[in-house]
Length: 285
Ligand code: PHE
Ligand code: FE
Image (tube, rainbow, N blue to C red; front, side):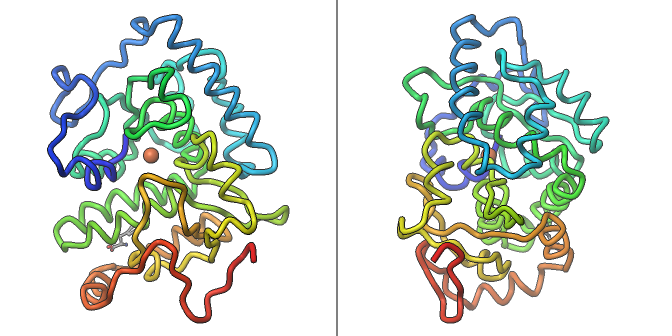
């Protein structure tokens, strides 16, 4: 599950996809794994295989290793099983949710080291592109990095920061950081630029696109204040990718109290998604 699409797209009041009738007050449901059809398991395998084949040399090692360890290639996974493995690794749980959930519930889950995963799978017509996050995006894209202790701590801290941003009027700003790190983040490694963002790693086309030179999209080092000002595209490949050197950089960079930052940002303009500021270095030229 994500909260960003709730903010960005559902402001029109359109109905959410998914069955919310059995959800508890934290929007948690049973996965009902036995109800998935054989056709859905087959679609999962196709999605998985296409995506896994794109990862070598593009996804970061942490992602590839954890994904293999998760053994989820053969069909839609039972969330409970991976949740137990994840808990042993980093103290996180996976909880099943009907789909997009409100910010408050989403941040509450993260702040308590629970990652909400949508239970439904996209249709075959949505093989290449889907608007709302499904179980493939949530599980394949997000869960592997939660096996990394530092990234897992960053996600919890993000949840705490989200709750705080809600009361400070900083949610639009903080959401941009989630977008450009958790969803579309790149990381510098000795082997070159690699992907850790779930929105890229679960996308058929963007895995290749985001690392290409000469596409017109920017690749710049993450600067948190700059990132919080930067608008993003929800219906096309990103026009800017922010790269970090380590997950520790994310964790350390978000340790400070953001209250004065939100205040400062109220007096600064937002930046279009394709901005390059004076002095910024493009990493892919
Ligand atoms: N530390 C930030 C604050 O005090 C919150 C935050 C955490 C922001 C994690 C981003 C990521 O508001
Ligand atoms: Fe997501």
